[in-house]
Image 1 (tube, rainbow, N blue to C red):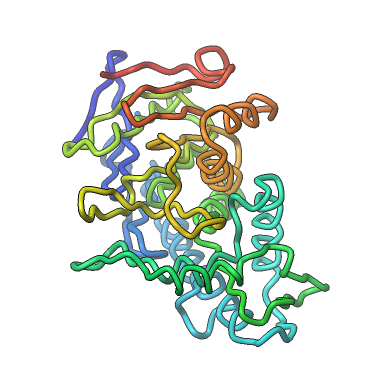
Image 2 (image 1 turned 60 degrees about the vertical axis):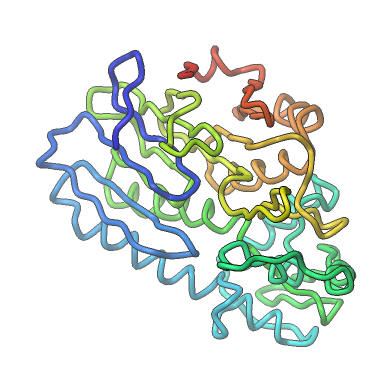
Length: 337
């Protein structure tokens, strides 16, 4: 389905169930697109020149490579090797080091509200089960005892865990990092126009052929039709949303979502439904969207307003959007509802 903003441009709606659609201003016969399933989500790359087919395929080769590095469920991945090493140092790829370092940075600035050693806790919660259940308190407390980003030790090209029971999970930032690497690969090969969409991480390459920005729509939380709540106009930027409607279940009238609080082991309950970050690099958008969700509206907005070239939209439980200082001036937006 397509959605049109009042400017008559076609917009891409970021749908947290990974149903995303978009067009550019190039001729439709020149557009090439491919979708596939990686990182537990559907990813789509669209380019606007049919001669770039090999580079489109190259993006998915990158996706395959990085899934082998970063997946916490593949036994042969770098992350699984670290988690299974019982505290011993493990030699890993330089990209794994880069991503872990980025994860540690966001773990630190959030004071552990976002923590890449949340693996034991996140594995307790199954938001895709047909019969979901709340983990028992004893299991949650045991998992919490292993969380602590200070346990991660990087030495050269090796990684170890001071707590041998700790488990790294890079799911909160891996998609953003991979989107950035895809963009870098495309630019290195002369591609100047396109959209990379990794299940809610949308990265716009350059600007459209007519020199106008991409018009990106962000979904109204829990809207069954995927209706946009607001749109933003961006050039060569990323739009990343973390929301409680991505993965969740309802039990006995209570909604349980996938953004977990490392402090108590349960989903954050801070009256937010989503946080959208608009910035240059998708890995930063990924990290900041989760960090700001963890911090809540006031502290999260304070953080965003202190950062250069970074804007945000917080949506509260009544679907009210709150905009950072540069929204409307640095980043044009329009409310849809």
